Length: 398
Ligand code: HEM
Image 1 (spheres, rainbow, N blue to C red):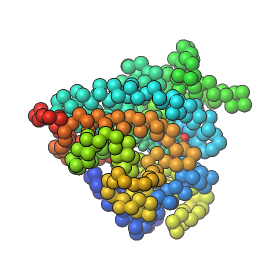
Image 2: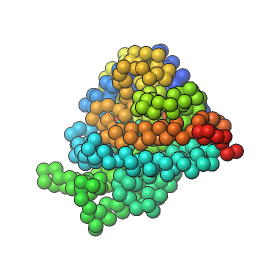
Image 3: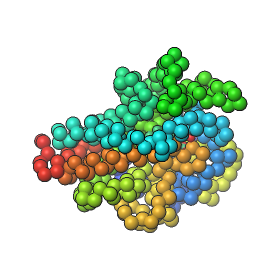
Image 4: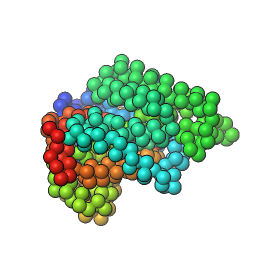
């Protein structure tokens, strides 16, 4: 339903403009209605974002999960189910992401990052999104799900087309690509049924092995869960790596500091995850009339939890727009909060730390050489960023 808008979603954005818009909203209208993207409340302050994420009884994920809304054919757990229905699906993937399980991943991730980064560096850089960050997360996902190289390549291509269709709001292509992702997930399940693997080492087998009161999970929901897993871990690292490169190019002093003191990389990553939070449009729907930030929310209203804004809230982060390595604590919302908080966060951190380490260790400097093309809601970060990589001790290839 249309009602007076507090803000319009801009047609065009650059790397900084979303932050300026959100800062204005946090100060003047922290829970703000827009009639764009299907109509939604933007929840921009940290405290309100937390309240929405933690109060799943009032704010459900079962209706609309992102802004703009995506017409979905099926529910995809665990994100599309409220507690306690989400728990068996969540546990099935969580057990593959425990600290003990992730212990062995360090050297594999180191090799993987080098495998994709070194060719990009050897040619002096280029579009870091198309030539590096679109390739790496899917390679990790492929290893995580024990996928054959051809399956992984198909997911990469279909996933990229799905994401572009989402960016353009091309609903016909979006539906077609979503169906293709379902086909891939279906084939993977059939393969694991025909050729069983131990659930301890295979997330798909793990989902198939779950029993609730002695019964397996409903087949269509297992399919939906796998379809979600195949895409959910790819998009955020992809755009975020682009943001890290833009930051390093704009701040050669930070680049030099991390190269000279690589032990600062984990701390620096946390600060970058705060400043360039890649999701801004994960959504909830109000189950009942309620008040948030002084605004009357009606039953059925969609709310975008704007993580990208909450992480720059001056109420929680002093000097919020500045990259600082001396913050005593960071109450980050980058990976969400509450019952749907990202189970992939430890794996994502491992990957992103290694990217930041190698990017700063292997280059003297990064330089932006063109415009940055940005993603749109529900994401934040570059879709294309031309970056020249100046190698340590030398000049870049032209
Ligand atoms: C920079 C990287 C990543 C970011 C910023 C990120 C962020 C998020 C956020 C904010 C949510 C919560 C959404 C909500 O509450 O509506 C989420 C959920 C989820 N993420 Fe991530 N994620 C990242 C990487 C990954 C990776 C690598 C994986 C897989 C290994 C993954 C798997 C998931 C899953 C399965 C969910 C749904 C959890 C549930 O509903 O219980 N994510 N992610």
